[in-house]
Image (cartoon, rainbow, N blue to C red; front, side):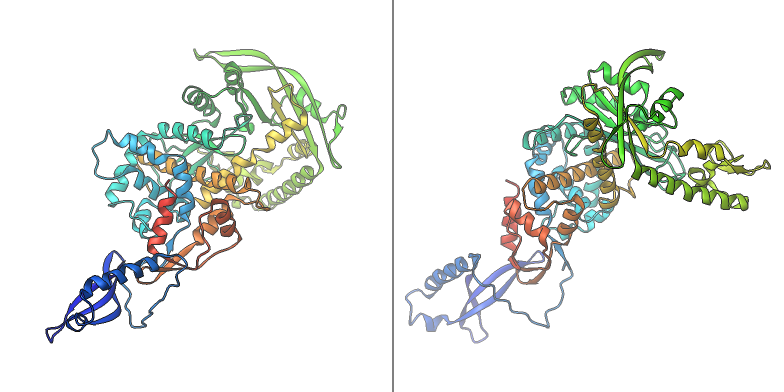
Length: 571
């Protein structure tokens, strides 16, 4: 608020109390009160301008008081500005707080000192991470839509793409930094570490060094890349790495563990993984490093001795109303490849836990009966057999032939149902097995640890569905690596938020997905002058407000108040 001298056509000076404010990046003015002509006021006051400047200062202070009512002058003839943004998101302030608690801005500040660049790596990184969390899409979309936030983070689209090269360069350093900060802020629980692999396909035809054809989770023929992800016991992301799509996932674990042993200074880890990682090389390497393992074990693919142990009723103990469990410590011969590439054998003591559940048996029988029914239908119309069936019904049909690419080829040989395979599978319905190096842990502890793999399965689901890691709109290898780094940090922030909320004893539990959904809806729109109206709240927003103490319950907020809130999250 200030005293404005207005020149009139009659030559006189008119004094007004005027409110100056910024709207859509432009300075604007609004007359609040007409004080009178200067020559008339001089008859009343020795110095009218000084007198009303004191009043203007007082009114400015009154306007700054949060409890002061906001008076809006809504003119229906006011046009929409060209730079007007329909909705702005303020949900990102929560991630702003977590981001700065991890000191990511400090990491980039230290690395930028050595670079000659005309843009801020941290600001662009914040834009890419917050956009991934709240409005996932391409890098161009993140740049074009950055006005949804209350800050300009990227000066140009070129700066966004140039930044990706540096993020790739600092990838491993940032992962190591994040691990140290998470350990300091929240502690790291390494009792168990969960590891799994997923892949991401690219809608391209030609392969390159990273994007190669391999077994696709979506059963697509496109080139893929694979990502191995490691979580700590509480489900917080620990590290990740990318590797070519044609590489076996079995070979992905040890290089990652070797890097973490050196970079993170980790002690003993017990790695929990699915049967896809259960191989002699992984077991031998983990034991050699002093680590442990808990893997699921394929029963149908095991040797005859193990199958007999599973089916032998002796030794099973009740484990609830419709389940049972038994275990043994067994001298297992492990075959592995040594450092010279030669095959070697060692004998290790391995605890083998077998679990039976009637629910699992019923589910397996139901799913197989559906697949067998489909196989019978295709036997009546063999011409309809296609590649998609190779992963389901075709596996129960004898006589199907495939070319080198896995495509089903026409054959003149007779096709018939594989009854022997069906009977073989039926006898193992409801059983699953776990093998481990942890001989002193009880069966219940081993089963509970293995069941924790749902954490990494959920993380992959969040990454693919909610953070929309793909489609991937960049093609250079360095840019692909940078893309996954921003996705990894976004996943870490969402998991930390989930952890913080569930540790706050609010009386309810929260999932990362519902937290993201509510924060995406916490938006506002510009009303008048520097005033914004907020449209959404729910129980999740209210609980976040209580846990973080950031006052998200206001219906109207001034731009200055919003900027102060954002600034407070960076401390």
